[in-house]
Length: 282
Image: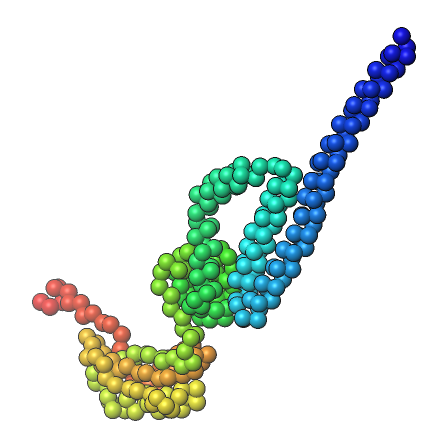
C-alpha cells in the first residue's frame, strides 16, 4: 500500500515538474525576450534622442524648443518600446492603447489651458516675434523678456518687477517688439506761452538735440509747431537714436528743455481757468 502511495506521489511530482518545464520553456523565453526588447529599446531611444538633440542644436533651434522636443521624442519612443515588450509577452496591447487614448483625451480636456500655453510657446519659439532680452509690449505687460518657457513668458518692467504672462495671452493679442530695430525715434511735445519768442524756442530745441551726441545726425532731428493749443503753442520734436539709448535720451531731453527754457525766460504754460465770482463783478 505504501509503495502505491509513493508511486502516486512520484507521478504527481513528475507531472508538475513537466508542467513547470513547459511553462518555463514557453514563458521564460518570452520574459527574456521582453527584457531584451526593453533594454535594447531603451538604449536605442537614448541614442535616437541624443542624435535628434544634436541635429536641433546644429540647426540653432531655440533652447526651449530643443528641451521640449527632446522630452516629447523620448516619451513617444519609450511608449513604443514598452508596448513592444508587452506584446512579446503575449499581452494584447490593443486594450492598453485604448486606455491610453481615453486617458489622453481626459487629460487633454482637463488641461486645455496648459496645453494651449504649450502650443503658444511652440509658436513663439518657431516664429520668434521676440527673444530673451528684447523690450516688448505683449499680453498686457511691457518690459524686458527674461525667459520663455513652455507655459509662460517672464517679463520685467522698467521698475524691475517680475510679470509672468501665460503664453496663450501673448499669442492671442498684439505683440510690440521695441528691440527688433537698431534705431528708434524719440517723439516729444513741448509747449510755450503765446507771448514767448517762437523762433527762439525752436532754435533752443534744435540746439539741445544737436548737443546730445546720442542723437543721430542722419536722419536729422526735427522740430516744428504742431498745434496752437488752448493755453500754449506746442512744438513736436523728433530725434532718432540707437535703440539702447532711447530711454536715456527721452528723459534727459525733457529735463534739459525745462532747465534751458527757464534760463532763457521761455515759459512752459499749464492749463488755467479764469473763475469770475458774481459778487466781484458788481
